[in-house]
Length: 469
Image (cartoon, rainbow, N blue to C red; front, side, top):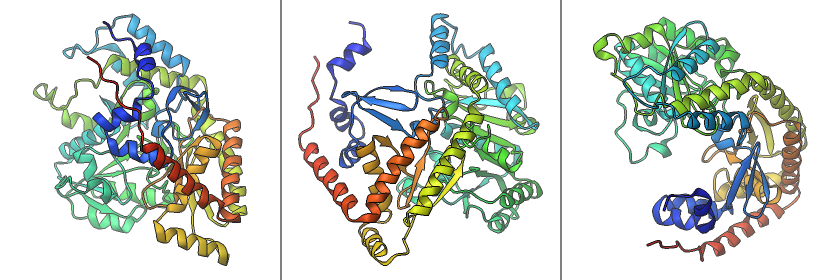
């Protein structure tokens, strides 16, 4: 019998976590159940998710930035339906299809004048891998420099550029010669570059892990150092790019002109995996330098026609609906509203980021009683406070957020770029409610403990997997 998705979803409803326990990642299922995030989502629309009880959740993760246009944008859906109905001759491989050319043309038009070529792949980590190879080929040098707290993907090459040791443990040895420097420290960068063997400096214009922002002077110095020492400057725009910060590319805020730019996530329209590497003519043609090297770097699904359609439809919506401008405006609204909470609550120290890449920074309060309570929490586990905010935001107010990184008291917000004042007002009111409790007494701690206890009881009796002959 042919597979029917609606029938499968209906007949096997509720087996989600049991199936993951049995066949996929049981630790992920355990984490979600522990914090009470084990919901059965049935659909998504715009900025919201809906579970099987009809409950609506404000999604401020947006698939880690994938859903820039929200979930189920009609223009992207329509374009993909049209493409499927056309029975396009997809992935002929020995072919130069039209749609990849059209999408490359659109991306080049949005980049700085030095960018002339595009390579398509399937994800952000694949884009990083390609950037490493391109930089090594173009410079003839072996080493790559990256920043602490960086995140560029989790395949072997990109993992070597990860600033978090928790991701690397047990997977080494990785890319030889990869060197970490402090984010925002131009002197440390120069010490590495002046050795003369660095192919590329790979960096996020705003770091996703922690939402760290460096001063504009650092960026000008970093680019100049790369030029001086003939090192390629690679801007990882996988999460910060595509309008998220209120400019199409986050590096535009600083007037930068990278040699290589990596993209993914939002380019997909939320439907088709896609990644892109934008490069200068010199860099790109050093890789594809002769007929014999025409296929020297490629991937089977990289120019998949459906992915190209999703990208083209997404860029069309960006233009028609002023997505970049809206992201900037809504980001300003978030900043203005959240600044009032910084003034009101001692434990909320700052709001940082740009546009709709937002970090809520929590820290030790000044007053004695609150400081004692904070110290007690931190003694149990570093950055426990931020997790204690994430959990009631979800349970009380149905708002989905995340801690920005392990052992860090920062909550990251990645709203869909179509979010507006309604979402700003709802979230700020929810955060105000949670922080009020955190500052008034131990109610938040009791609520957190109760959530953990109830979750432990639920974990004891998961719905079994239905066997099929």
